[in-house]
Amino acid sequence: MNKKLTAALLTLSVLISVSACGKTQTNYHTSQETFGKTYYEPAKPSKSPLYEDTYEQTELRSESGAVIKFLYDSDIISYIGQGGTFYLVGTDATKCFLHIVIQDVSAGTYEDAKTANSKYDPKDIALESGRKAFCFTVTGDESNLHIMIDAKDIVPSGKGVISCYVGTKSAWEYSEANIANMIDKGFKANK
Image (tube, rainbow, N blue to C red; front, side):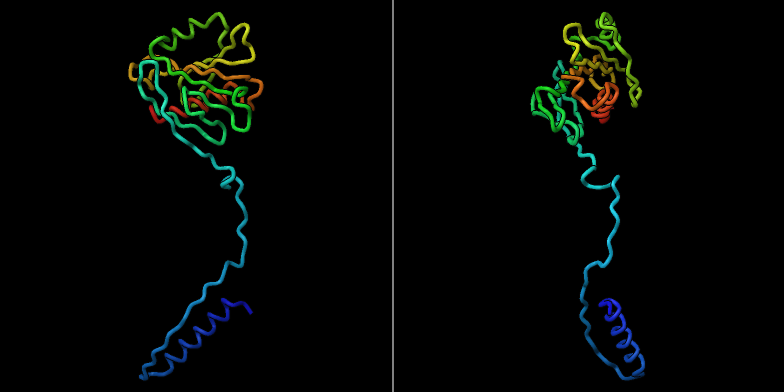
């Protein structure tokens, strides 16, 4: 017989006998035993700890020296600890790297950066945050990708770009838009 059911029946019988005693006062002590769960809870893949996003935060410095917080999903990219260089988890860090430079001195405005790179036929990227971004490849370096994100609401000066250099774009499992959105979300805390 189930141990929980047996314990419940014994407790109930003691309570009935105590209440049946009328005016006679009876003191008794009970001990409780905890049994393990006898059922299994089905797994929920979307909330499984193996698949939860793991975010870490680091500080990146802009060209002017401003400290900017950057949040990254360490299930996807890992930080090497210096110079704004990250790499795709589970790959060669020299092949699948992501280098982020916050340009708030040399780049001017986002529009200036787009004009300066117009010879490379920049492609606009729609970001979920509404910020402006574009990407391009440089002649002679087509295997790598450049992503430029407007940084006017991130840097104290109110102008500049987040310049991202993505190494061996064909080795990344993500599209240009996925990578740009991932980077952009990392700076969301600074909005």
